[in-house]
Image 1 (cartoon, rainbow, N blue to C red):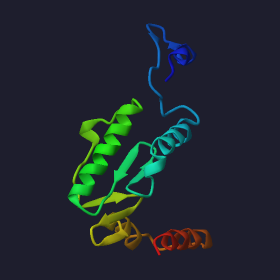
Image 2 (cartoon, one colour):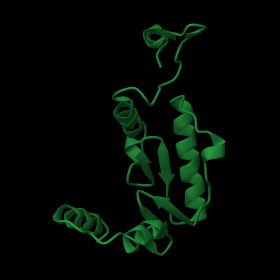
Image 3 (cartoon, rainbow, N blue to C red):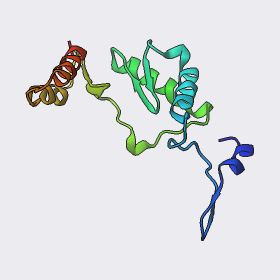
Amino acid sequence: MRPEDVPKMAFRTRYEHYEILVMSFGLTNVPATFMSLMNGVFNQFLDSFVIVFIDDILVYSKSEEEHADYLRIVLVVLGKEMLYAKFSKCAFWLTSVAFFGACSFIEGVMVDPQNFEAVKNWVRPSSVTEVRSFVGLTSYYR
């Protein structure tokens, strides 16, 4: 958050005065604003080796050497833009990943098994609205 905007986000309780120093995702339009920022930051790499969804960054490659180069690029860009990743929330050198309801493997992309189980165990629809809902859900996974 820009220093001149910090007072605009300040609030006081009965006991303390608080100032929000970083972007709070509970505020209106913050996710869209942050997504726009991330797309701008990684624009030249999107769909080449990076996929970004809000604060999730997926780096993909065909070889370990290529992956190391791409990770380095992403980390340098984050540092240059003063954006920080929490190391404990990062996962490196994965051979498969669940992202947007799909699992990506070296062999290709398939439906996340957890989502498949949810469809298999779906309660039998008892109304037209429920049938439409179920058809919409299953059409997504087609």
